[in-house]
Image 1 (cartoon, rainbow, N blue to C red):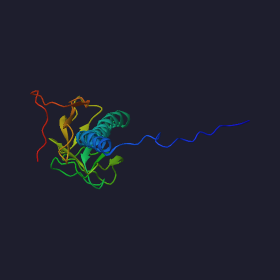
Image 2: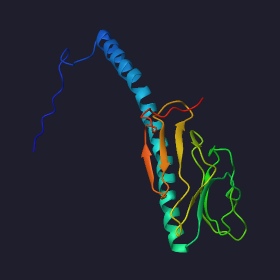
Image 3: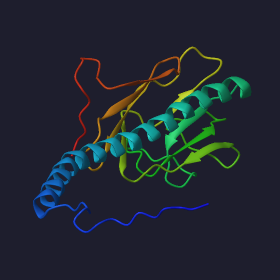
Image 4: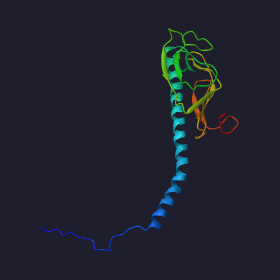
Amino acid sequence: MNREVRIPRAGSARAYSLYELVMTLGLASIVLTLGVPSMADLVANHRLRVEVDRLFHAVHLARKESVVRRRVVTLCPSPDGVDCVPGGEWAGGWMLFVNRDRDLPARRDANELLVRRTNIDPRVRILSNRDSYSLRSTELRATNGTLVFCSRSGRGTPRALVISYTGRPRVTYKDSHGRPYACPD
């Protein structure tokens, strides 16, 4: 079996000129300049979505646990998983616990079961108009309210998790007046 090996002749090799290289690099830099801010917004929106999903599922878990245990289950901001922190800022994380004594403001006692404890991404800010949310299985109402999710970098689209009186969560990008949510500086 004879194989032919072709050797290129002098002058037949194709090369790029300096002009073609400069134009290609210029075009690539323009595309990257336009694409990088969009990528940063995409990443910020993803971070916000992850935190919204965590709390969304925590509210569903609280509803389920309140029915199964026939007890009040409370969701509150907590950096350590021991104490609820009032003030509407959920920056340190949150906890979900069985609130046996139904205290208000909510406080986790030593005999109360911790169902879940989660830290949040420090690049995400969560603000709430309530210090805690209590879900009840035997009463008609839960604690309603709104949690607003913002990116600390100012990127991403602010959104809110609205919890109804029945304890049903929903995600929205606009307030009750139809205005987009804005994050305080």
